[in-house]
Length: 119
Length: 366
Image (cartoon, rainbow over all chains, first blue to last red):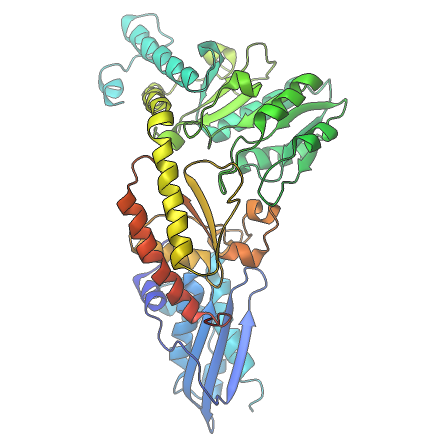
């Protein structure tokens, strides 16, 4: 499978990997079809995501898209974060093969799930 | 192979000198392939590869025997060339019994015996599995098939050249081989068809290959196949024991340096070159990509690596959950590998696994 160099970079050197102690929001989502899983920790001040970290177990695309999305939402307000689509993430990493599009859904679902309790 | 493109480019069916020269090369290759599996030269039919060999064997028998019955026995761990061919025949009104395997990946010959019915026309059981390398009790199943007077096909694509194969001892009527699995060219294979086997050809035309498979032979490919067969035959005693040592060195090295890994079918009779390993808390596609970036080429049974997002049917059949198959890796070694190659993998993979586990929300360091 030919991945773009940017995706491979985020897979090999994931940004924002880890956990946040005393996080304001935590969500874990998994893909029942392939078994990939992503966990997301958020630090929120007022309406703004001020820090985010992730962990993921899954294919290279799942890890890269999780990392990229986590990095992307830092500094965003909730509305902006909720508006992110799987296409946004995939396109930013040079595109994904059709069968792999489900992987980046993990990040979108994780963001929405984590922000569920917030207005 | 190259001189066959530039000098010996005649059509082996032609009676002029160019044709007869090509025919002589074809005959020599046929003898070399026959020798590798202890067949008669007249029993070797050249085809385009393992997939065509399996199709010709199964469809050929199904069509020639349909007046006698429409029941076929096979297993759940066959290569897709057998699996999908049998599924296609199911749609055409044939009945297929799909035998399971033990957790070690082995078919029980007694189950084969019990599955035989008066309308059974074919038993197809692979000699060695392509994912986990287990070697099936083909000789015992062959004896059962012979006693029951049922045609017996075995897909020998993985086993040929890796372990000794004697089609007479195995009592197979049909045996599939592929050139590129023994370092030959791609796009060439052969089907062994025991003398007297009633088989309906799947390609009709000029009556090539004793009317078993029409179409002008791929002479350059076949010549390459012949040379590969000769070398594989010699390598059975000189190279394969060394390959097995390398495989064992790989497995013990990885087990020593990585916690929570398992070798599939570890204690079953296995091909000397195959190793299927499951790594907990890491996903196979990510492992494959990481190894690839280090110059190591392996494959995985993870759903994430297949277009269908289905986990390996073989790992599923030996009782592994999709989660377990998620972290599987298949190493295929060959006679060109060295101890340095193996040691390099043992050095590189633990770090990759560690890195991916650090990212896993499930993994807790012991």
